[in-house]
Length: 99
Image 1: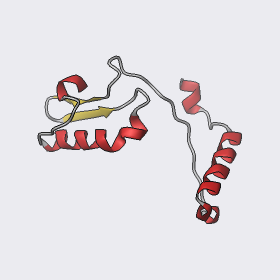
Image 2 (image 1 turned 90 degrees about the horizontal axis):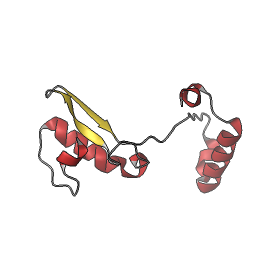
Image 3 (image 1 turned 90 degrees about the vertical axis):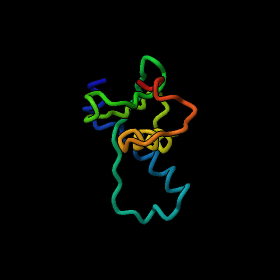
């Protein structure tokens, strides 16, 4: 895993992905700068994110993992923001399950 993160990634993957995106959104062909980076999927022990305070009410974390980060990032971010703002939230996943 460490080697993957320290690696620049595959030039072939970057080229193929850029070509795919440009076919999907032709206006991107005019984009002068592209940046890609490596990523990895990790898992939590419970299969759900950790969204909770880790030090009193001073430091909070939102670690999504479990292959669910990208597709649900708006929802998990909303939960994390409400936690930090001290607001209640009505959500199908209870805060107790995210600790």
